[in-house]
Amino acid sequence: MSSGEPTSAESVADRSRPVVVCYEVDQLPAVDSALMGNVRRSLVKTDEVLVPPRDARTFTVSAGQYFRITGVDGPQVGDLNLWNARDLTERFFSGKTRQLHATHVSTGDRLWSSLPGLRPMATITHDTLGWYGWDEDGGGIHDVIGTRCDPYTNHMLKGVDYHYCCHSNLTRALAAGTGMSLAEAELHVHDVLNVFMCTGFTADTHQYFMKASPVRPGDFIEFVADIDLLGALSACPGGDCSASHSDDATTCYPLLVEIFDAPDLPESWAPTVRSGYRGGHGLQA
Image (cartoon, rainbow, N blue to C red):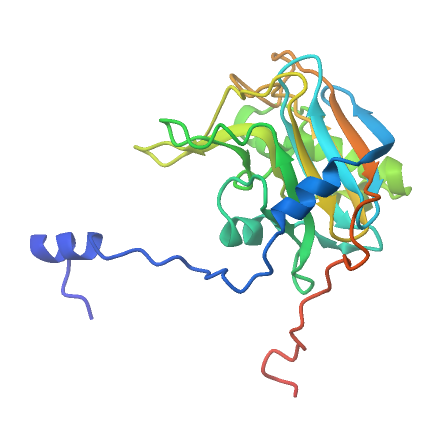
């Protein structure tokens, strides 16, 4: 049993212990960046979806196709949800993606699916904002930290019902795209990839912060779909997230989703498979 606060020497020793990265990822299959780069040079555009400001739209991508999210007209961040197109219970797992990669993702990182699937859903093949890295505030681009702006938190903190938060946008879009009711669709909306958003944690209070995104018209983040996907993208009411969100105060712009066939993808390429863990959890053989 502890006898109270540690001595000064003990506290210094405790605080200076070495860090240990939680997950050793050396055994994960390597991303062949050179191959993906060669494949993307021959992409053939097959479809596009324009996401209006303060709204969301769904889109579908077959395994082996590429998809690209592009800024148009002005600086705008987006909230991305992904589902297995054949089973919506398998969806993007931002927490595991963060643990396996980092708080912010870029070229060569994967977006992982929820348990028990736990497999890559999409791999980032190109990122025009990859140059940004980490700024002096500790901020980076494309975070898997934040959840999504939602009307429940907004009501709790401001006492206002605002219906164009990303959570509501994604709910409406999924309902429209699948024929579900709003109540059914809402249960499938999940934590997001904050596309183009510049975020981090403050050095003093360690609070989640946002700052103006450096995204410009023509900037994009691009993925190859590792399985058949249903996606939904919300053009956040925060615009470039330099000032506020969950209101109509900020100027917002559309986002463009483009879908591409990849004719040069090798015949050996195959969709990812679900986790090999057999289940049982210690109670079954």
